[in-house]
Length: 172
Image 1 (tube, rainbow, N blue to C red):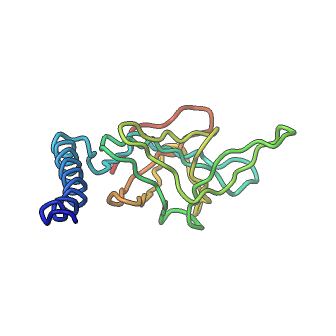
Image 2 (image 1 turned 180 degrees about the vertical axis):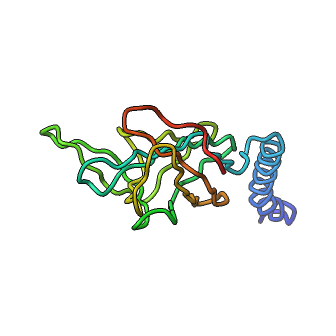
């Protein structure tokens, strides 16, 4: 028959080892977070914004934004709104068919990686817009960007002729 102290020691060891491991894990996690390893919230800014002047019979054109995220975690651009468009702007991605024809495919959101950002271009992600009225080079178009985590951003993009440059830094 086992001694009473041996019966008590086995349950303490069975409980004590996991409690000790959890304590060490929490201490390590706390140290990691205190030293900035857990990341900081996303901090997205727009450093460039332009929109192509519509041309030809197509009523739609595209806006391009350069988003910089100097925060410690990624964010997602989930909505673009504008009072200057006939229909709500839409995030889209430039795609090519096997025969070489280009088309736009709608996307629900776009990732803005931490410590980097997102540069929209005619060959990747962009914002499809349908102007309300006529847009001329040099005019500005207002946009509001909404993110999963960050605050909404208001930005003004300059209208440029396609192929003539990428505008200037946006005005808030």
